[in-house]
Length: 145
Image 1 (cartoon, rainbow, N blue to C red):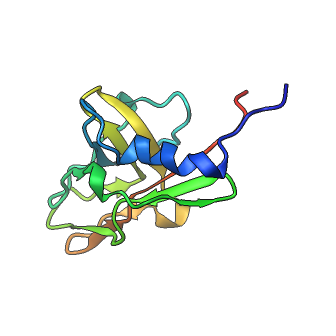
Image 2: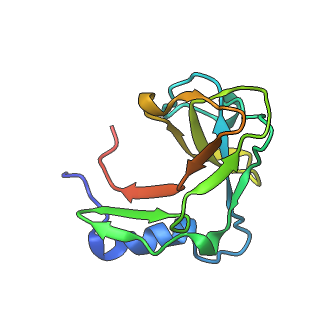
């Protein structure tokens, strides 16, 4: 049987349900940066990530109503957390290298999304500098193997 898919007609609603709709008992995810040099894969768990500790860093609560209405195109739905990148100022050490970020459901103690940065973006934080990111999430369907 051929693989099924989520059509454009419904994929935006599915993404809104995941990210932003009010669902009893579902709390917002939290964005964290990780500072260990790993390449996440399907087996990555929260315990595999070493969270950043530089002065000025705080976890970011991704409140559900702040996710944008999904942009749907060719079987993909894409949403961002607001429209302006979030900024953290590096006010002190330790000097750490940010390898990526993750969205964590701390209620359940699990990862909901993890992303390693592009090689060109992996660098140690600089005291007096800043780190910025526009949180995003994309939903698409593909055949599982």
